[in-house]
Length: 193
Image 1 (cartoon, rainbow, N blue to C red):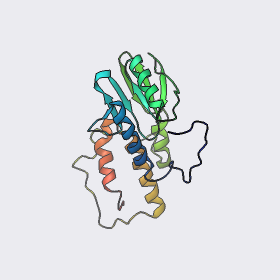
Image 2: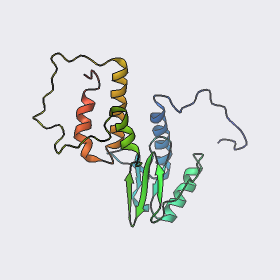
Image 3: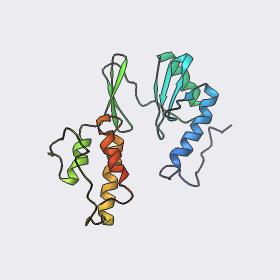
Image 4: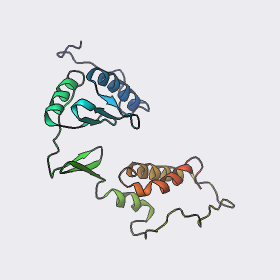
């Protein structure tokens, strides 16, 4: 049991480490076992408690808890015994909050998740693409990859490519129509041309 009057000095910060999200998920999973909350098999960062109709999204070090008010309050109190937590907002009907960079808006019994309005424009601007015309069938079979005579990207160009693909991957849960294109772009991240 930790002494609440004691301040601990970390020898090394978990934030920013390559494995920090893994450590966080492992720590949270141990806590969840004691509360009866289970991870989804399809996504271990999403938890549920069937009898309480409670759902929790736990990427990195932020938590988003959904369910009946009484169940959320009870769960939060239990969680507070294991983690240093604070409530930063409540998503009421018609409200919009920001969570892990996404805008969440409550409408009736649903929560709509959207990227910030500037995200796509900011993503396209460094490549001079904000006014690019969309295509109806991106990645169609008629487009061939030409590898003959194409040189590898410089280190700077490769870094820009990897950043763009990473930003697009962050956007795909909100824009599922991008999944195929982003998958194809991701396939070329080892040796982009």
